[in-house]
Amino acid sequence: MQNQDGLTVINSQPLIPPEKIQDKTLDQMTLPERSDLLREAYQHINGDDASTEELEIIGMMETKVEEKLASWGLVVRKITEAADLCKVEADYYQQKVNDAKARGERFQKKIDGMGEFIKAKMIEFNKKKIETPLVTVSLRKKPQKVEISENANTESPEHPDFVLTTVSRRWDKKAIKDKLSEGQLFESVRLSEPDFSISIKGA
Image (tube, rainbow, N blue to C red):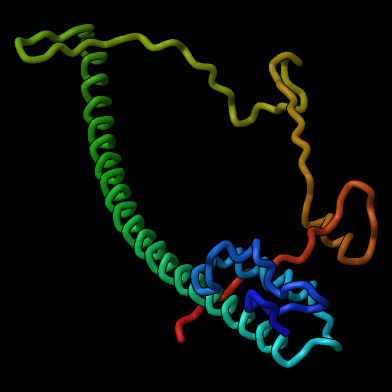
């Protein structure tokens, strides 16, 4: 049944409250606005008492919501395609970065080899510094490092202060999940609520 404003009413209440329309048609409304209206219509309607006209309006509103959901799905698909292209581009540039790093590593290997050769010859000939108009090469003494033998035993070191003991504690989530899946209950851990993902494919 419709009132004087042309709005369908149920039990003297409009199926679509006027204040919710705000001079917008269903086609102009956003998806959240359409969903809110449909939810309110469901709350107003009594399934057994609903007229054919009222059910038709509900069906029309459901169709509008479905259309909007489908359009959002299309947008998600297009954005996904753009994201995939970005990933391809990122992989391309990542390969460029990897190639540059590899070249740098080869250069560094060459530098290290030549530097070791120069150092060995300067030590052999007792040269602390070599100066030319273009370059100065000198030996610098590095701070000494502690070298620990492979046979050293941390369980019985020569001095107790030589060994640091660290303890790492973390949750074994696989073991927890196994116990929970078996039906065991614990106060501080639980399985999360089931989650869902959407799948959007082209027609």
